[in-house]
Image (cartoon, rainbow over all chains, first blue to last red; front, side):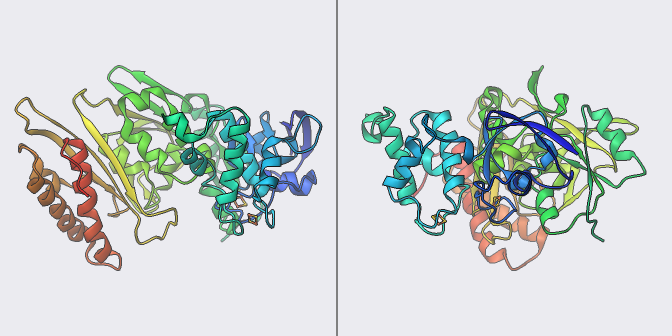
Length: 163
Length: 291
Ligand code: FES
Ligand code: FES
């Protein structure tokens, strides 16, 4: 069946079987492999995308469910010059990327978190990426990368914020 | 039997969903957030040849106040419940229960109707809905029916929902202004985790400081989510004290074992349940927290 939706700001139409997931639509039918395929049962977050402004596991969305809706993938998250944005730079700087498998999902989740909370607290950051598993970094550097972005975007360090 | 491929159709109203689900030429299942169905699909346990998408049916997507009740559409997501001002104001217990579910990704997809209709033993909204006396309004081929949530889920993964029906919404009476409520949960995401246990509690005092109403509903504890009336009986009509909440906790453990018998998780739960009951009662009746 033909599915029409907005993908990273562009109107997109794609003909797929009705029983595949959004994850498979992106990877197998549009060759957009930035979205990673991990567990396919909603537990690892590697497949995270933004659906109408909310972070979701694309492995739990049936492809036809996105008909008429807006999807943003990691390919749609970048700086004005097309390179990495400040959040992505911070991931590199903080050493938040090792094997990199979880990174697209982490960046997607963090992007929504930053948009929703503006200047999230450490606790909100941890909660915001709680659906994303990382087997390499131990999360510390990932939380730091997000905190770094918060600071650079004008947020105050947490202690002062609560003072 | 597992089916290899299946079809998809999107319903635009409850009536259309029920008509599609009753179409004898298909084996249909309703699809909402997909957090359960898509897992079955991945495991190859496809027992349908068509999914009827009810996740965007307008009348199932709203939260509104109707008189003395809040009506929550069955296709409202957990995240939407957590963030909704009417829920935060009148039903914080439900907001806490929905917040305790999964991850942001799961809360953004999973729906309250799906949580009830799939009746997982660990469905976290169940104890909250039972505690709040929620009534499910169900649309069937033959019309509409209203069933208390406690009677919808009859056991793990078993409901009393008629074939080809959909839950349209939940009618949740607004508790009186003096009511206090609490939701606590222990144990993490894993469905099989021995430590999974939750508790919804609600109550209020009369003018003399005695317990006028108390509802104690453990989750992931008994096959059918229910009020623990023996624990409630300990509190009812009494002035809440440390001694009393401890007794209520013990009565809760006794009642659990009476219902489930002794099983592998009992040694853990007979310690954990009283602790959860005590903690919730302390919060609801304003006793100081211990530890
Ligand atoms: S691949 Fe979707 S959550 Fe793991
Ligand atoms: S960097 Fe390897 S899984 Fe996170």
